[in-house]
Image 1 (cartoon, rainbow, N blue to C red):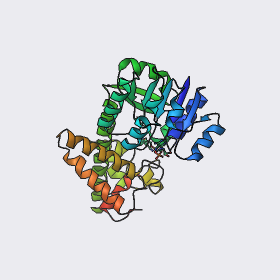
Image 2 (image 1 turned 135 degrees about the horizontal axis):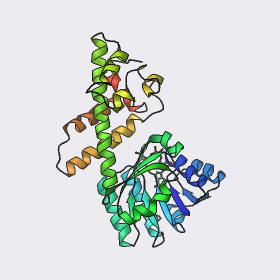
Image 3 (image 1 turned 120 degrees about the vertical axis):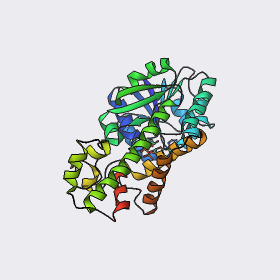
Length: 296
Ligand code: NAD
C-alpha cells in the first residue's frame, strides 16, 4: 500500500519503520531533515511538504506533537487536504484535543476524505515493538479500512465511536493515570515516613483495594519494582512534560464541556509544579519527589 507518514519523532520514527518492514511503500515528511534521511536510508522516499507526501498516498498517517501542528499539517496551502486523493484515508495518531480532531475531520469530509483520530497508548516501547493500542474515532467503514495498516504498528484497535472519541478515550485515561500516580506517590511516601518498608507496603496495597497500575506495575518508589522507571532514576518512560500536555487537553476539554474535573485540575497543577522545578524531562512517576524532597 502507498502510505504517507508525516511526523518522524520519538513515536513516528519507529512506527514508520514498522510500516516499511511490513512491505508498504512509504513517503515521509518532517520539518527536520535528520529523521527523514534515516527513513530514506531504510527504503522510504522523501517529500518536500505534507501536501507532497499526501499526493499519491492511499493512506496518510500523521504523528505530530499537538493540536496546532495537526491543523497546520492538514489545512494550510502545503497541507494534506490541499493534495490528498479523493479516496485517500487519513489517520491522525497524534494526541490532540477532541474539538480540533472533529474540526479537521469535518474539513476532510467536505472534500470526500474519511479521517480517523487514532491516538495511541504503549509509548515508544510499544511503537518499537509494534504493540501499540489505537483508540479510534470516526466512520466504522473507515475503521475497517484502517485495520490492516494499524496492524503493522500495533496489536489492539478499539473503535470508540464518532469522530473525536478516540481522543476522548485517550485524555480520560491519561487524566486518571495522572491522578492514580499522584495518589500512589502520596501513599508510598506517607508509609515510608511512618516507618514501613516501601516494598512491603506496595505488596500489601497490591493485594488490597488500593491496587492500581501505578502501584503494581509502575510504582513510583525506587526499588519497589525493578522494571519501573523509578528504579532507574526516572529515565526511559513517559515524560512528565507529555503528561502535563495531556492533562492540559483534558482540563481544556472539561472547561469547554462545563464538566468539573476537580482532581484532574489539581493533577495538572502538580505536574506544572514538577515542570517548574526543572523535572519535566523525567518520567512522570518522579512526581513522588514533590512529596519528599528527592527519594533518589
Ligand atoms: P516528538 O516531538 O518526538 O515528534 C514530533 C515530530 O513532528 C517531530 O519530529 C517534529 O519535527 C514533527 N513536526 C512537527 N510539526 C510538523 C509539521 N507541521 N509537519 C511535519 N512534521 C512536523 O513527539 P512524539 O513523542 O513522537 O509524540 C507524537 C504524538 O504522540 C504526541 O501527540 C504525543 O502526545 C503522542 N504520544 C507520545 C507518546 C510517547 O511516549 N512519546 C506516547 C503516546 C502518545
